[in-house]
Image (cartoon, rainbow, N blue to C red):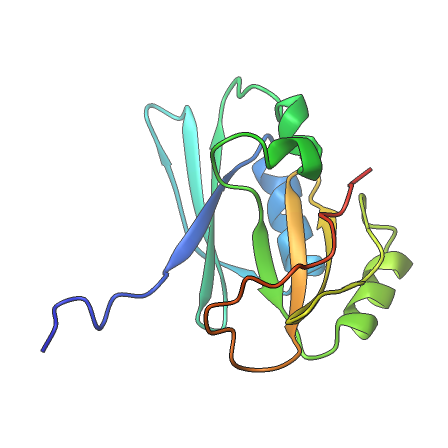
Length: 155
């Protein structure tokens, strides 16, 4: 048996400025709940693992954290910088999720884009971190070199 066959993505991690505000957002907007929570480094760093089903999201909140860099708040500009670009959440009904996020007046909500393999849209958390909702249209990405729609410009 190949040692790598049971390796899978466990979580993504985000650095946030306010733990309570971020927990409230990810719980009320996306349905996550706190799984684990600890404070380390003499109280200077709080680490929270949020869970929804088998998905985890890790939040880091350090005292005196710098704000989100300007390029990271603009998805198009951020694609020109090496690093993590966003966290994506999946749904079978992107239109319903989009309507609910619009009803809640969530920041940075883009229109739904109709790509070759996915319908998708973006929005932002309270710190301006880019999040995505995706819905797979069909199976068989294969060696896709498909021309998806241009990256969305987030406001």
